[in-house]
Length: 96
Image (cartoon, rainbow, N blue to C red):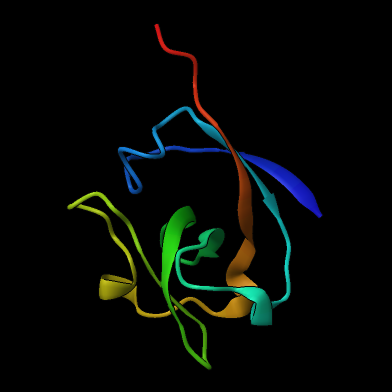
């Protein structure tokens, strides 16, 4: 399945900025690799976008690139069923 998601927040700045769009596709868990950007549903924080740091048997350890990013260092690993998709295309918002 293919979806477009609008980025909000600064979790992966400066590469991904608020207002950018990403196209995501669903892929099987065994295809996830460190460095991939994923979008997932977190029960407390809602839809989030993060970079995979490690793939573990129980799930994904994800991080942001912004110093104040809330990520797996705070909330632990992400279960595979929470992942909405892997980013395959990044559309930057127009510069003013």
